Image (tube, rainbow, N blue to C red; front, side, top):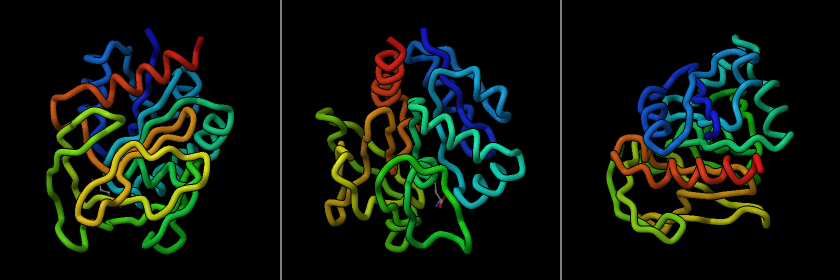
Length: 194
Ligand code: GLN
């Protein structure tokens, strides 16, 4: 059973912990570099990416996060977490930094300019899921090594991607009670540790 951390600087940590436990993982909150060292994979939750970035700096977590991702640790970012995993962002706050790892441009609050939150059924990696979007980003463009796993209306925007051990969604599967996205990530972590 893999041990998967949830980055617990800010955001909806508890919901992800519960979904990971229901998906067959041991789940634990991660705030410190030593806690990060102890996990096989990491979820970066939804919340507010500017706050998360500032707290990551304050807690000296930004470089350790970058390091572990560079070394190949599987990570899954949802919403603000997707922003954190993006190599480049649009409409970020002044000086806003990310952890990076996925070769993509993510536009912050992209859907939010039209409607703050909405729900939609969409295909995620070939399965129909119900997706909840809250002031959600979308993926503006991806590099050649990034697989698009899902798109959403309006505009057929990219909302789910994978690049090797890194997964990101604009939406919040932890709020639906449907564990399939978390199970998909737990399988990724399982596969990478063998
Ligand atoms: N708009 C938020 C941000 O920029 C993300 C919203 C969310 O995670 N629900 O970080």
